[in-house]
Image (cartoon, rainbow, N blue to C red; front, side, top):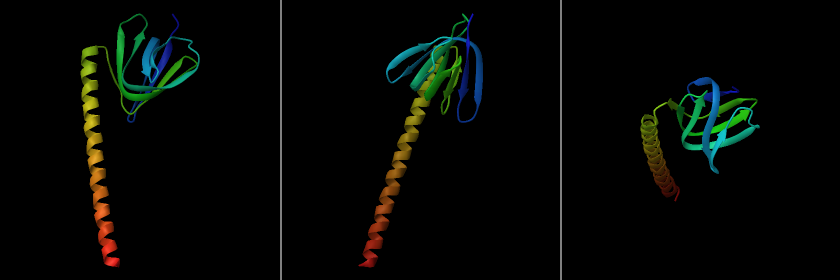
Length: 133
């Protein structure tokens, strides 16, 4: 049986998985699949779940907040900020939902912080302008 390797990279670690027979992911154009000996391919995955299969075993699910995917010479490389792997779809879906909520909360906190900084800068500029006149 022909297989390929899956090389995962995130901000803190890397993981190599061999004997992969199928990979299914999703980019901006929709869902797609990769099998061994696929032509060279590059895309960016959307936030969500991808899946892969080792041999004829069941699917393993890969949760990620988007990724750059590159397939060449029977090696699939994914580069992302963070990834989770699990064989249980319900469990990994719940983890992905928690991750999405946390990222949304962090994004909102960052926006609020930037807005406060902007307001403080404008206040300071007004004060400096008043001192000059």
